[in-house]
Image (cartoon, rainbow, N blue to C red; front, side, top):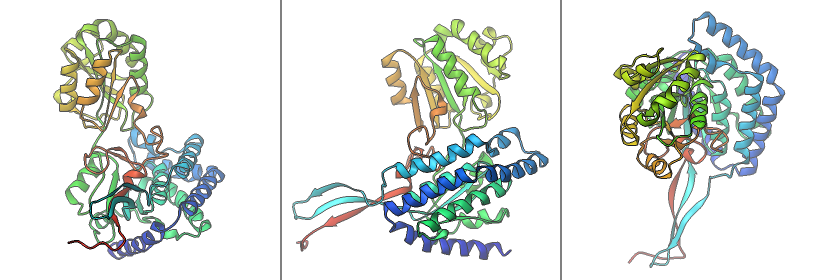
Length: 418
């Protein structure tokens, strides 16, 4: 295959299809989404079978446990994928929405209209559910999508893409609105991220290696986050049972996700009382604790944490722990070592909670809730195209609105400027 020629063809087709989907009305888009969701449910067994082939190949290739976890599709996962597509269909269509319409002294009305971005390239590793999520969100927001999944999920992605095309065809929309790059050649990514004439934005979903490469090589604007070093701070006014439950869920529910907690901070005034039972729970679940000197004094199994540990997204049963003087030091630590993804405070003190919300510089900041809620599905976005730690255009889980922009519109009845 001539990869450059192939990718240029994919880009041209996406640009043409983007014009068709941009003018599609809400009913047509929703009809496509409902058909896709029904097809996913109907073909659950076939999707799992394709995924099992991917998993077998991935295990033979020696993929890490975190990657295998993200790659795995279960019956429950397929059902959640279909539900996510249906939730996108149920959401209001942002395309064409006019806001801030105001009369000017000249008699013209000036406002802004929400419009699709155009062609969105999504580059992702493992997670086959991204194929359905990204297709649904791009479709509903009036964008064409070029999906380049990892080679480890090629069979799963092809199977899901076929169901997406079924839904598009049933609604009378071009199948080329959603294209899955049908090659595992890494050169395809290099072409995709430099095709400014065809691609309007790139959304990378993957590990540090992938994102670092794209940051260095992409000529197309990106919506991205580099990693997810998420923090829990247990305040001096924390409820003990709540703190234990939130740490447990944030860290141990899943180890391989970007919203898993990787760092735990505990106020010194409650560390003697709260840290040992939390550490015992983590240790019982096989989590390695790397902590400061005070942590090691309170937790016999803890090893010394390095500066690098405090800045690391482990994606594994490892957590860094530090005893801090209080809220101020916790905020300073998070803003210094964190990745601006998701942080939570456990506290019954309203003033401390509000200060944490204001001063922590992250895309999602929480009070008395697990970091695992930082997710488009949980936020009511139906699904997410990714999580952005950027500060411009989109931040946090990126749903429909994040896949649109606004243009200025002017309504007049013959006015001329004097």
